Image (cartoon, rainbow, N blue to C red):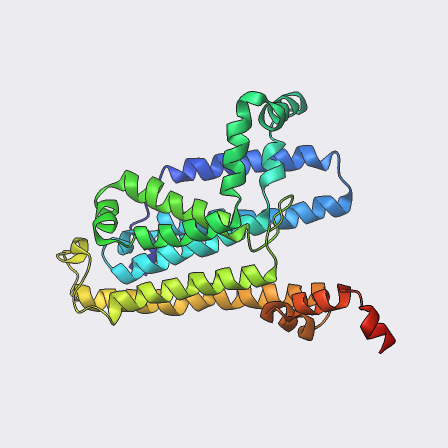
Length: 305
């Protein structure tokens, strides 16, 4: 029981989360005055997913999990999977963007909108926004962030420096994960730019690279990578055994987010295409060739026989 009741910590992220929740509730209240009951209920249901993601984030960084993550590598891997995959998934599913925008009064909101979307001096901001929303950039950033922070020198630096650990490591996980999941699930008013084929490929590539990272840390090495876990007082588990357990968690837990995501993407693709056969044709590229054949007019020779 001591594992759950001891070693809770205050983190500045709590202030950010509380302020975000307050702003979101203010936005929901303002939206409610201009919405139907159906839309109000839909936004409220989404808010539960959003808040669930924020609670999950706090549970990973202020609960005893963060304390034990500094002593056991395998606990740190659980923390990383939660922050990089499940927290952003819930945030995107919660679609907090419009409610957070409506925290501003209508006059300031319109002024900000004109400045950001129509102003000449903010063209570079719009260009940055388009770049960040590019699906290929989101896919590359997600995998780059995961690999970079598991480079031994950067990992050890994050463990020794709380600012790097909380704001750079964890912050980059949340940002990269959110950009990634925005390309997988619709998050009103934003929709993924790519279709089911790209989404399935992105999930498989990301899960495959995480598997390669796990194999590198367990099967393809015989030593512990991270010096920070070499001499932890009170820990009897060997650093290499700890690393192997962490690699196994990274390997196996990858399926916990990848398989359900694939199932959802495929189900939605079936709903869009109309049948399983149409989805298979689309995935294998047969659909485009069939469309081309159908759209190509018959030649006079074909007509006359």
